Each structure stands twice: as C-alpha cells, then as structure tokens.
Length: 64
Image (tube, rainbow, N blue to C red; front, side, top):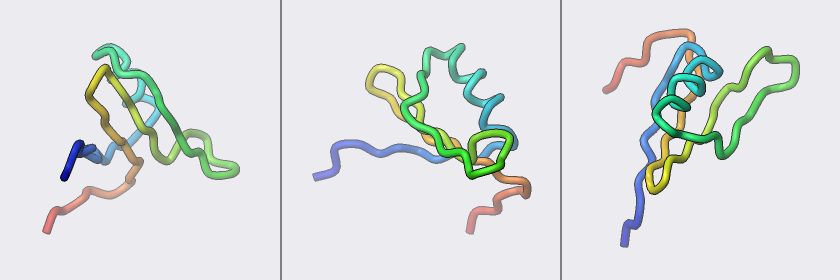
C-alpha cells in the first residue's frame, strides 16, 4: 500500500528555493552539499503532512 509520494523538482539554486519554500511554511528536513560546493545539491523539505525534494540542475530537464 502506498502511503505517501514525494515530488522532486529541479531548480537552479537549492538555497534560493529553500528561501522561497520557507515563505510557504516548508522547513528543511535534510540537505546534501558535496565537498567544496558553495551550496547544497539537494534538499528535503517538509510542511505539516506535505514533503518536497528539490535538486540543483544547470540544464533544463526534458521529461520523456
């Protein structure tokens, strides 16, 4: 039985996206910053019963 799904959104800046989603009452649950990187590569965000993952990309993502 599926209890939850977490959407993944690709963004240009994980840090800026965290700031944006904080205005929508999302809090950071976890992040990963590669060694030497200036900002996180991805973040897990939570707001009450909603979750969202965001990941940095430098190129447009084309869905197949």
